[in-house]
Image 1 (cartoon, rainbow, N blue to C red):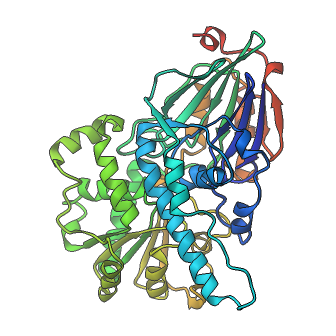
Image 2 (image 1 turned 120 degrees about the vertical axis):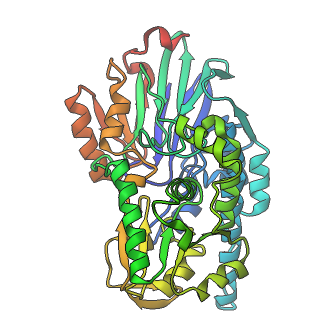
Image 3 (image 1 turned 90 degrees about the vertical axis):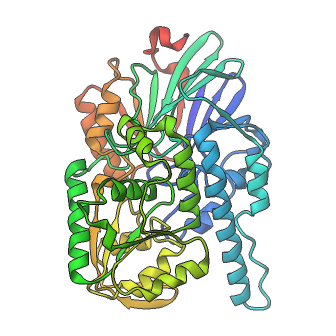
Amino acid sequence: MELEFFGAAGEVTGSCHIVRAADRQLLLDCGMIQGGRDAQARNRMAFPFNAQALDAVVLSHAHLDHCGRLPLLVQRGFRGPIYTNRACRDLLPVLLKDSAKLAERDAERRNRQRDGGDEDIEPLYTVADVEKTLELVRPFAYDEKHTLFPGITARVRDAGHILGSSSIELWVEEASVRRKLLFSGDLGQYESPILLDPHEFHSADVVLMESTYGNRLHRDRDATEVELGEILMAAWRDGGNVVIPAFAIGRSQELLYLFAKHFKDWRMQRWRIFLDSPMAIEASEIYWRHEDRYDEEARHLRAGFGTMPPLPNLVLARTADDSKAINAMRRGAIIIAGSGMCTGGRILHHLKREAGRRECQIVFTGFQAPGTLGRAIVDRSEKIRIHGQQIEFAAQVHTLGGLSAHGDQHDLLRWYGSMAERPPVYLVHGERESAEALAVELRKIGATVTVSEPGLKVELANLPSRAGQDAVD
């Protein structure tokens, strides 16, 4: 019985961990590495394990930093099942096909620019690889135990992060030794719009826990909504546009929800709202179909909406021409586009046009990884470079931490604190400073904490059993 860490250990992206038990090897997530100049090269490197030897993948959710290298895994020989919940299953094609298309276009562009003697650059993976990957997905319901293999049982619970996000419980048995492993996945905030709160657990023998915001406290949710309304009021007064780099899954849907909820008091009717992302449009339609994952307020509001949030001034920019048409608007436009960290996509075209305008408001609603353009903007760099063009930065920048899809330090401590026996914790998915800060707070409430590093191995059988009857039932 062994747990080994590979990705998102000492950093935020690239989630990837292996559990070896009952003569099987299970991979928890297979995420893409994002941010930093070497991210592309790191994603192309050989996996530090044999893809063909894996028996299954258990996937926490559909963000690329958790699922983005699954097609690469298949390309390199993996043929086992990919287990996840049904909402995640529905979102996977949206994310992975978009990722493949971007990779194919990038390879095509670089091949046009290369010297004649160089070898052709291949995309990280193709749409064909994605199709093969999707054939391996085996969805199951939330809150029900499923036997994956003799001696290995799994259950997924809502993590409250995005639609289809899961915390994963694994019960493993080998030579009459039983242990329960709990992987938090990415945890959302409590009482956030649309989604259910993260499920709270009572027991585990060992916990893999995210630490993205382990050293921060988000602004109060109600205060954040007030702040967003004030930003829109100021933007209208200043006569510019509002540009929102947003992840296609999660924040885009939450923003539309808030605009509909506050349509009258924020005077939203005077704006034109552009959802400039085919992926976000498709994801929004999937969100709409999974009302079983909504919280009570969202279910109530949805019953009154009848269709997607009733924004009569919402423009769905599906095509490139639709996106280019937005350029004609010098004021009065709210533009929601990806990618959320400004690493690619249509948001770059809007930022190139708007970032040098003082009347423009740029609003970030999620984490910006080091090395990304989004991080440079949040850090108020005087100059930024987009598509080879240097831009003197002049726009106003706002970071709405209260809208983050990740829970803050208090949320993380609340989630872990529901386990009375205080199982040992291995922190993942966080920059070292954030993880170390969370470790200090967890130790104050009685936890034994390790900040994970790539290659760290944990012998599960050597850990004391704390899950009690739950390890069996």
